[in-house]
Image 1 (tube, one colour):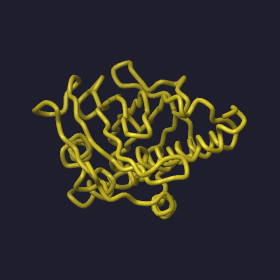
Image 2 (spheres, rainbow, N blue to C red):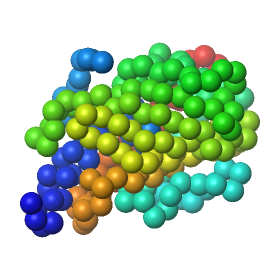
Image 3 (spheres, rainbow, N blue to C red):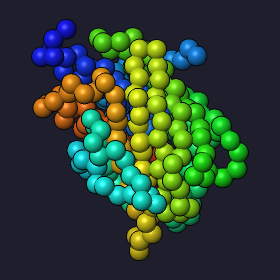
Image 4 (spheres, rainbow, N blue to C red):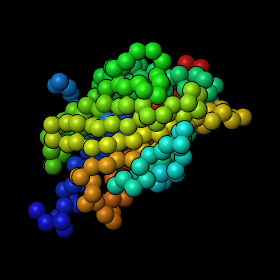
Length: 232
């Protein structure tokens, strides 16, 4: 297959992967038989969800303890949302990773690989579906996330691979920052993806996939907002 043909087919797989990881995600940036949504249904879900702010915004370059996402990665995006709940509560909801599947529709399973509060050396594994596309059959990604940096109530950065039978992301890096304001808690997130399947994307194909990653981040933030405000 020539490079000139790669973007069209690669983008279909990457879009499926983006919906799976970024929307968490709605099958939903980093790392068994299940029922799978179709790509059309997942895209419709993403479109129906009101964006937080900046689904089309490239990564903004924030950091946690001096570390950030990979700005040189093929795909990067950032966005944020204001949540009407105390910062400590929002932090607890987001970092209780074992409960993700209770408020994020496309987190199929999640398990901690250690114990105790989430810390700078914590690891967790979770799964999310990739819908069927012309490029690949329906798949389930297993994402092993390793926390790289964590400042309680301030920020957390994790990274890791997302591995499926037909699609793999080599390294995803996801940053979260939390800021108390007079109106509530401002949550900012950035994500970068490194994968050979994304390297050939350019022009409209690249922007489509990057935009869907941004939309996926918005869906995650909206789910976090709904859960935190419901519990507050």
